[in-house]
Structure formats: structure tokens, C-alpha cells
Image (tube, rainbow, N blue to C red; front, side):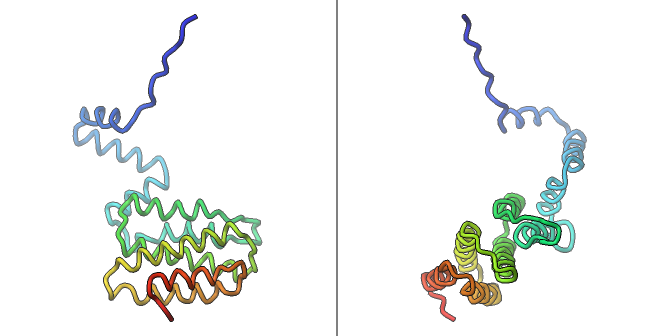
Length: 183
């Protein structure tokens, strides 16, 4: 009886070694093929290369779709898919001001949807509170001029979140207090 050895899955190191054999034209063709292969790749490249007027637009559209679904179309929510849009932006370019905008937008859409339809979902609320904390952490690292409007928007999220029960607004109050932010 012989035991078959498994070949390890290819890694970045393997890809990088193969890419060294490509000339400039070959690399451009490869990037073109990747660009054509998926909308996600297109979004990544547009963001990384700072192409277009609003680099956050597609990320916001994804967050909006998954946190404020169209109930008349029987769409569902997905915290994971909304958070993935933020992670994808982070990988593409991750500029702190853009990241803060996306995280605050996430909080606004999550709180707005919950308030609008009376959502009662403990997991959704926990994710909202965690993202609220991430928003604060990201915002306090920004220059003073960029903070004010984002903090005002988060304060509105906190105000709305007191309508939910489950201690959501109270947890947000605590987070604001931890960061020394009072309204």
C-alpha cells in the first residue's frame, strides 16, 4: 500500500515566480484578462488606480444592497457581504478617509433599515455596534477637519439606534464615551 503525497496548493510565491517570466506586454494582457473576468476585479483596479469620479460608489452600492434590501423583491440582508465591500476597499487602496466614509455609511444604512422596517435581529445589531466602534476608531485617526461631519453622522446613527431596544443605543453611548465624545 503506497501513500500518495499531496502536492501543496499553489501560493503567491509560485505565481510571483511565473510572473517573472512575463514581459511588459504579457503582464498587461494578463491584467486585461483579470479585468475582463469579473466586476470585482474591475472595481479593484478602478479603485487602486484612482479611476473615475467616485471610487466609493460601487462599494456603497454593495453595502446598500445588503444592509437595506428591497423587501418588495424578497431580498435578504447579509452583514458578511456588506462588510466584504469594506474589506475589498481596504485591499484596493484603503485610504483612511475613504475607509471612514464607508464604515459610517455602513452604520447609517444598517441603522436606517432597522429603524425603517422595525428589524429585530440580534446578530445584525451586534454587527452594527461593532462597526460603530470601528467607525470611531477610524475617525479619531483622521485629521481634525475630516472628523466633525463623520462624528455628526455617527451621533445620528446612535440616536436612531435607541429606537431598537436590545441595548444597541446604550452600547453606542458607551463607545462614544470611551472615545471621549459626548453630544
